[in-house]
Length: 215
Length: 215
Image 1 (cartoon, rainbow over the protein chains, first blue to last red):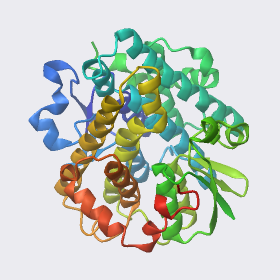
Image 2 (cartoon, each protein chain N blue to C red; image 1 turned 90 degrees about the horizontal axis):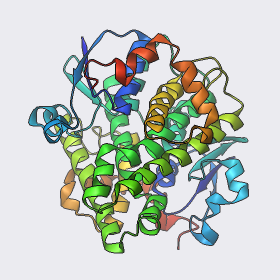
Image 3 (cartoon, each protein chain N blue to C red; image 1 turned 120 degrees about the vertical axis):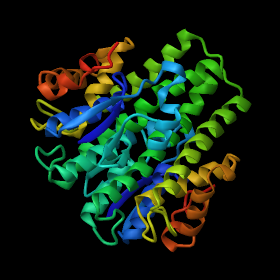
């Protein structure tokens, strides 16, 4: 059975949990605590599994895959149904661009290790660290909201009424935005899409509070 | 003809220029100056084209695609030969994970807008800003070098002797690393791969100094 190395609050792991649930792929979750004892992701055992010391990683029969979006593309190729990418190349590019906007331009700036560097190496105050967090999330989600609206492609979800990789990345980012008190009015469409996704069992079961390692 | 909105020094645009050259897709380059007049990417005309105000964007017959890796996947689907992704799903996941490690975990932290925020909003000194830059590049490329070596998959390039999306992202990041004085000894394999790629015409023609808007 596949093993997913996960941390309940990791939004990159949250993406893969949703994708596994949507596709109904049997899997076991192995919790890696990102804070305990300086971070289990830096422990010898985990570094051997994933030299990037990042969550998530997926072990498929001893082959370890890293990077949430690469893992999801792999799941899409191995388990094509239900499809998380549309078939039309332009629509695929639209969906992937949304996922990458979040995975490249929003989430990495607010990763635990980056916030730590701001505080420990640059002596940034907690207040300014939180402002940094909100700045990148509100800017990024605001721009992305305009992309989704101006595309004319959205419906119940980011691409019409089909759940795609776009939604799989939007939901965890909206969770983070809410947790850190970002203004939802900056991205009303994305917030509404996230709420509709959360009515689906595959999303609900993947959320942080539903994980065995939730605190 | 396709139009690529580009800036000579943008490493995300550099990736797409390489992919277009490798596939021999005829295209016109439209320079967007990221510094002049506060940044042409924030100008009304460009924001209408790409609400993300980021480079690159690809205009294919009036349809605008954003996010370099989404654009490259689109080119791969539209122009399958020469393939920039292998056919085996595990090898595809390996190649995509390398590209995403750079596009998500290294490059976004050192983007122009992020460096600006450090200086303008957080009052970080030039020295500490440069240390921040080198920290994330050296950490990220160092880890990625171990991923590539320990995979047992590398050869002349990141995946054996086939040029893939991995190489397309490695080269621009190595260019940035060298420009900012990062230690090449932290990622010897990736540096060697980049040097071999640069012997190929498609890479050489895509480099910043070969662009019409180079300064």
